[in-house]
Length: 138
Image 1 (tube, helix red, strand yellow):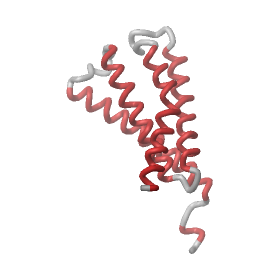
Image 2 (cartoon, helix red, strand yellow; image 1 turned 120 degrees about the vertical axis):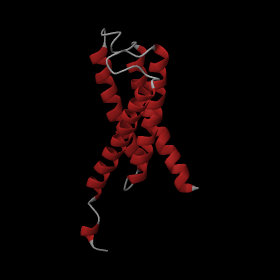
Image 3 (cartoon, rainbow, N blue to C red; image 1 turned 30 degrees about the vertical axis):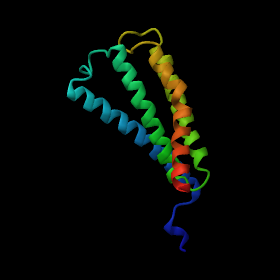
């Protein structure tokens, strides 16, 4: 096989993680837009209610799992490691969000919301990778 036909493994690893991140972010943004367009979420200049924040936390956790699945699926080897790297990036981004939103309620939502994203980042991407591994085996 011609080696120029496939990118080197480090590039494939980076691509797997980046595409997993893009999948999770894109799904979250589309869900936000659809929920706002449907009237289930208020316009962007108005804060969400606690139940709406709970819904957002839930679908963001599911989408983080999808990102972990994508990263694992595209990984050249060690799929769970790729998903956990993605989870680490998600954890870092969620921590930054937690710090940035500290003491800035109600516009940034209740304190539990960014904390929930911090706590679910790694388990969600691990779950996505586990699902991918089971699917690959079965």
